[in-house]
Length: 179
Image (tube, rainbow, N blue to C red; front, side, top):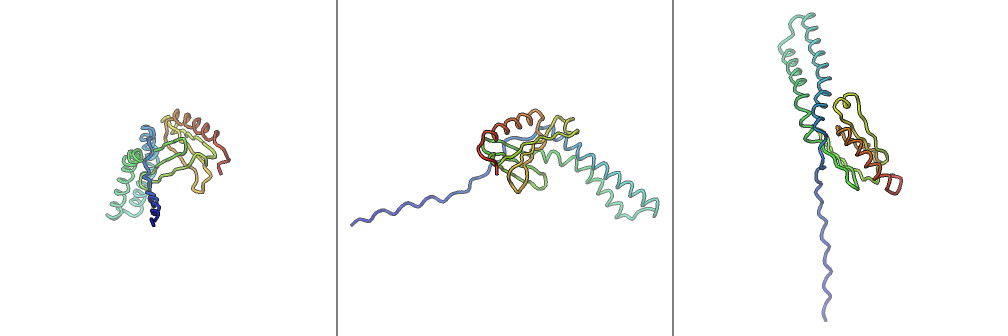
């Protein structure tokens, strides 16, 4: 008597490797982020210098450690607008496919978000005064997710308008209510 062969065991699923989003933000984002970082850095540097002068006028020469901390603070405030924008530009990426929106953002803490287009509820664009000067816009895709909206910062303004139209067409054609 022959015995039937044992059924083949199905292959164990291998985890798929998530590739990075395909598109970088506009190269003008570096200048925008630099100016946007320079404004608070200058204000904080002026406040730090004013505090040092006030200390010097009221109590005499501050101790060496206060001077060292002040200089260290000024160096950090000067370095931030120089270092952060190019690092952030290398990290920020985005991609919209027929099925999902995928973003990666940050510069110290890097986050990646993917939202299926079937879950998209609204698509908004935003362009503040400083962004208009750099001809940039940000796109916010709100989904039926507790994690909140997905934002693509610093797209070329024209590209953002086209992307809003594309996302509106894709999500408008999908069935359901995105919940």
